Length: 319
Ligand SMILES: Nc1nc2c(ncn2[C@@H]2O[C@H](COP(=O)(O)OP(=O)(O)OP(=O)(O)O)[C@@H](O)[C@H]2O)c(=O)[nH]1
Ligand SMILES: C[S@@+](CC[C@H](N)C(=O)[O-])C[C@H]1O[C@@H](n2cnc3c(N)ncnc32)[C@H](O)[C@@H]1O
Ligand code: SF4
Image (cartoon, rainbow, N blue to C red; front, side, top):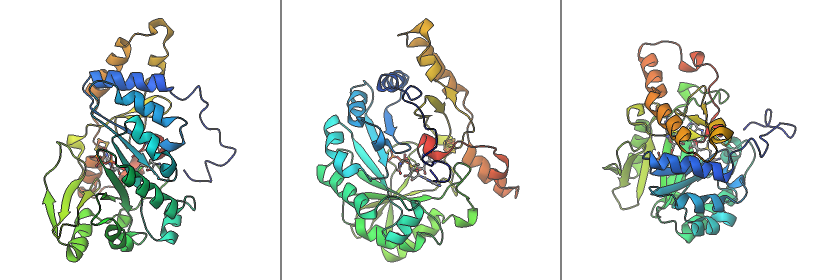
């Protein structure tokens, strides 16, 4: 969220514009009735939402929900980890792009503090989330790629799984250039030369990360190749923004307004309109942005961001 746009005078959502916990819980419950089993709380920064553990406790109780994860920048994690664990959160993913304070500062817009994030990761590990702790690392050429071995070495021989993510053209303002992408194949070659790797079978159909283990027993690592090897064919994710828009693709230009359905006074307390809206959106969806990007590239057309129009910004719908 660049300072130039989200400065102190920026008009953020009012409490009434945001979905309440009751409304989020209701969407999650109806989604679970339709077959959703996994929820992720992301953002924006989810730990800025007051009383987040209360929301977690409510979501955990929904029949059919087997896995609740949280993706966070880690700054407020140390002080909230215990309450989140107590509320029933299954696992935590912390975004961490570098262990070099200068690179970290550059990639986080000069905000945040590396040691505080590391303390948050350590707190989460010490508390012990049942489905574990992961690190999301977005790799950008000549920005943080040289520091990846140091970051991996830090977490080898721990139960923390690092996933290296190809830098994507999300939103409209990250100045993406394909030359900045370090492909998973390239990263894998570099890492394999240091610590040989062996593939591990996917844990579930459509798993986003390709899993590997260090042959020397150093643990597990994942590669997320959304640019070089798109996985739209297996995409099973919908994203609900805090003001109640449902997005069926990370690169969507518009969402569908569920807040109006939730607050429709003529059908107060009825779940059926919400169920129909959710099921209808999912059945109609045809999103395959990353595959289309790849196809344009192979036809040597203009880059997709030239054509895509205003995409939703990633901080609005999470990763
Ligand atoms: N293009 C694309 N990228 C995605 C999608 N889902 C995840 N990603 C990328 O992968 C990163 C990690 O996503 P997570 O949901 O944390 O990881 P995951 O491995 O899919 O999740 P788990 O298997 O639940 O641990 C995101 O921050 C994105 O960069 C998707 O649907 N499309
Ligand atoms: C948008 S953040 C939101 C949640 C939280 N504020 C955080 O920092 O983790 C969620 C994830 O998006 C991913 N992400 C952000 N920008 C990306 C990009 N350009 N390409 C690929 N993934 C990206 C990162 O992996 C990050 O873990
Ligand atoms: S680009 Fe869109 S459709 Fe493809 S995997 Fe990502 S979210 Fe799903």
